[in-house]
Length: 171
Image (cartoon, rainbow, N blue to C red; front, side):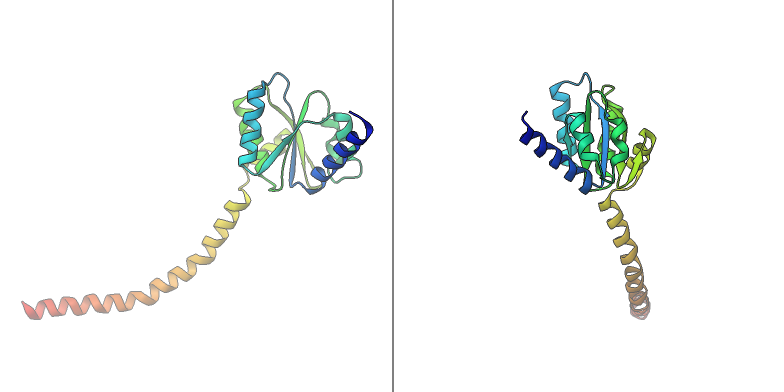
């Protein structure tokens, strides 16, 4: 890898660290190519990505970024999992670590905050952006639904009383 390629990799990693909602650092030593492809597919499905990069280049890219505190995790065979959604990469990484002993979460960063493995697990427990939006929409829509039901209920009650009275007169 020549100097220009290294500069390009550092620039790409810098953009990842600056723009991602969450970055998870993990060891992947001993994983097969098929297992890594499975991790990449799961991450892509959740809206994230997986990147393997030289630790030295990643540390250079971290200098001056909000996630600079994770530089200490970059030792050995590390992989970076990241996503724009602040929860997606942590969820997929945590789930994958439970099913594969060779994938060990070292920590990560969420904005300017460093996360240890327990912090990554805590972030993974949070609801995703879509789940939060759905719950907010449901809470906003519920009162309107209740009002519509309350307004329609008296008319429905009057109609059923009139139907009952008609049936009594007919009998």
